[in-house]
Amino acid sequence: MEIIHVSAECYPVAKAGGLGDVVGALPKYQTKLGHVAKVVMPMYRTKFLYDNDWELVHEGGAWLGGTWFKYAVIKEKTNKLGFDLYLVDVNGLLDREKIYGYDDDTERFLSFQIAVVSWLNEWGHMPDVVHVHDYHAGLIPFFMKYAYGFENLRSVTTVLTIHNAQYQGWMGWNKRHLLPAFDDWKSGMLDWADMINPLASGVKCADKVTTVSPSYMEELRFAANGLESLFEYERGKCVGILNGIDNEVWNPAKDPLLHTKYSAKTVVKGKKANKEALAAQYNLDPKKPLFVFIGRLVGEKAAEILPGSIDQSMTMHEQRLNFMMLGSGETRVEAALQSLVDKYPGNYACYIGYNEQLAHQLYAAADFLLMPSRVEPCGLNQMYALRYGTVPMVRNTGGLRDTVIDIGAPNFEGFGLVFNEATAWDLNESINRAMGWYYEKPDILQAARKKMMAIDHSWESSAGAYLNLYAQ
Ligand code: GLC
Image (tube, rainbow, N blue to C red; front, side, top):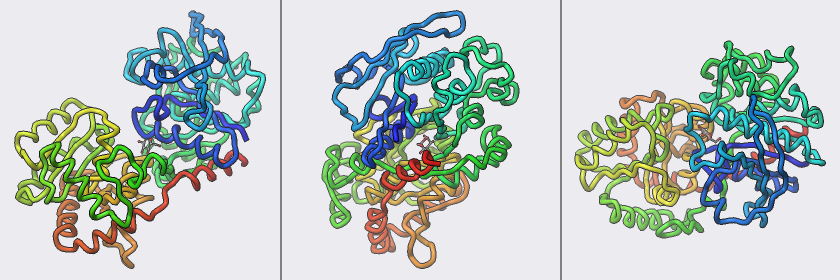
C-alpha cells in the first residue's frame, strides 16, 4: 500500500511537540512492514533544510483568494529518514523560522494544503491513502472530495488523525474566498458553529478518523472544545490507536545523548551516574530523589500548578527532594518557575526553552516524571519515562490512563503513580506517595523500574493497526 502523510511537523525536520515525533516515526515503521509511506510538510527555514540535499520534483501555482502563488515541491535525496520526505515551498508564507505563531498562520496553512492537493492531483501517480494530521491539514479531505479542479483525487481514501482536538484552526466565513472553488451545496461540510472549522471538516469528510489513544477517543464525546456532538454523531468511523515511540531514538542502552548508557539490568547504577552528572551541571543534590517536568508550560499540561506545588512540597519535605523543569510557554508560568531557582539553591533547577538533549538526560537522571495534564490525547513523555526506568506520575486522563498502572494496584502489576485532579493538592498527595516509596520501599520501586523498562510501546503494533484501518 502507498500512504502519504500530510503534516505541519515531522521530527527531525521540524518539531514543536508530539505531533512531530509521531509523523517522524510512523512512516518509518510502515515502510518496515513492507509498505510505501511518504511525508509531505511545509518547507520552513530549519537546520535540517540547510544540512541536507534536495531535488526539485514539481513546480506549480494556485490561487489563494485573488492572489496567484507559486509553489515548489522538493524531495530529500538520500532517503535519510527511512522514507521519502517532500517539502512544499511557498515563498513568503511557509519559508519562515518557526512552525506556528504568525498572524497569517491561516493563510500559511491554507496555501500549504492547496499546494499539496494541486501537486497530488497533477502527479501522474496516486497513493492509496492520504493520511492527514491535525487541523493544519484538516481541509484536505474536503478539497479532495468537493473542490473543483482536483478530480483525480476523488476516489483516494483519506484518514484524519487528531493529535489534539483543542486546536481546530477555525476562521470566519469571510475567509471563504481563500479556499479553492467548491460545490456550494457542500458548504455544510466546512461549517461548525457558523465558522469554517478545518478540524470539524476533516472529521466530516475523511473516510476514517483516528485519535492517538482509545481513552481520548471516548473523552472527545464529552470534552472536545465544542465538537462533542460531532464526535458522537461520527463515532462509527472514529477509532483510537495508541501512539508508539521510536525505540531506536529512545533507548537508554544506546542513547548517544546520555552521560552514561544503561539497560534494565544496570538501571540502578546507570540512573545514579546520570543523576550525578546532571546534578553537578545544574546544582542539584544527587542523594535526593529527582522529580522532573518536561513539556510546554501551558494550561493543557496544567503547568501553572507546578510552582505552587513545588513550593509546598519543598516545605513539607524539608527539601529532601529535587525538582528540575524543562520547557517553555506562558510567560507567567515561566517567570514563576524561574523565581524558584534563588529560593531553593541546590535542590531546584529550571531550563526555559526547548532542548532535546537535555530532555534525554532528564529521563535518564530523574526518579519521577510529573504529568498532571488536563488534556493528554496520548502523551509520549510517560512512555519515554517508562523506557528510561523513570516512574511516571500522571493524571488519570486520555493516553495517560491507557499507559500507566498505579503501583498500588492489586496483584502488583503497577509501576506508576496515578491521581485524579489537575490541582496542586492532588499532585502534592502524589509526591507524598512517591517520597514514601522512594525512602521506605526502595526495593519495590527498583523492581517497578525493571518492570516498566520491559514494557513494549514500540511502533510495530500501532503501525500495524493503522494498516488494518487503511485496508478497511
Ligand atoms: C499532541 C498531544 C499529545 C500526543 C501528541 C502525539 O501533542 O497533546 O498527547 O502524544 O500530540 O500524538
